[in-house]
Amino acid sequence: MKSSAKNINLTSVDDLFTTEESRIDENREKVQEIPLSQLYTFKDHPFKVIDNEAMFDTAESVKQYGVLVPAIARPRDEGGYELVAGHRRKRACELAELTTMPVIVRNLDDDAATIIMVDSNIQRESLLPSERAFAYKLKLNAMKRQAGRPSKENMSQVGTQKRSDQMLADQTGESRNQIQRYIRLTELISPLLDMVDEKKIAFNPAVELSYLKPDEQNLLLDAMDSEQATPSLSQAQRLKKYSQEGKLSLDVMTAIMSEEKKGELDKVTLTGDKLRKYFPKSYTPQKMEETILKLLEGWYKKRQQQQER
Image (cartoon, rainbow, N blue to C red; front, side, top):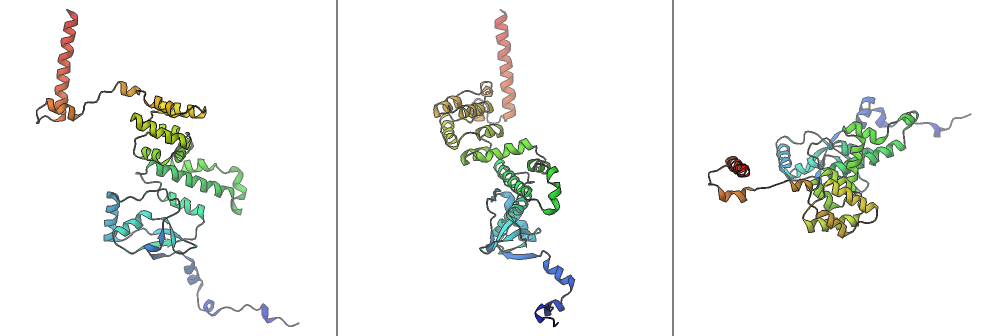
């Protein structure tokens, strides 16, 4: 019986003249110089790229030494590359008037890309609460999806696998509860979340306010503006309670925001502008304070003497 020529696999000329080592090298990740115009921001990137002093310092370093750590990007279906890690480096290159930057191109699915994107930024000390909140939310959702479709190698370990939020807690050094509290901040409307970033609203009250419906949060902005005040923790907790009971109105919010906070009742503020007219120009703030305390001490002793008569 004759063998069919159709079943014969011939080695290509290229394969004949390439070694195994060169074939492995072809598949190895390489650093490429990619035009900045072909690098696009990662979808839902939660980290802010700001032209501040730190950015200008980075740009100056890039101008002198180049980008020392390559960025990571993945190919886009519509052309170009989506940055996974390296958004700040790209901006520094733009400020340094460079046209390309070194990039490692990697084929990544959405979840793997999200985890790398978050991990490359989350350890920065200067993260805003909003950045940390959205980063935790993005990574936790990606981890949950990955846990929901384990590889064949991990199939036998699914029953003993840690909860995704516990794994994230172990990786970040935060407690599971604290991670969930940060994620709650993503439920705040943008103006309130901006106030958290600006430290006008403290973290704990902000978490309580995140349980208010969006329309209630917008009304709260009006009440805060009317009373020129931001909620304390106890006030935020009461606002949340009224919301859950369906009793939260603008009038209720205004009444709560108009309350004097306990700390304010015991607080006396004397600014330099108020005091300056009573002292010579040569007096320093420390000297002014010493003089005020001496005068108060004299006034106190005089009152004591009058009461003893």
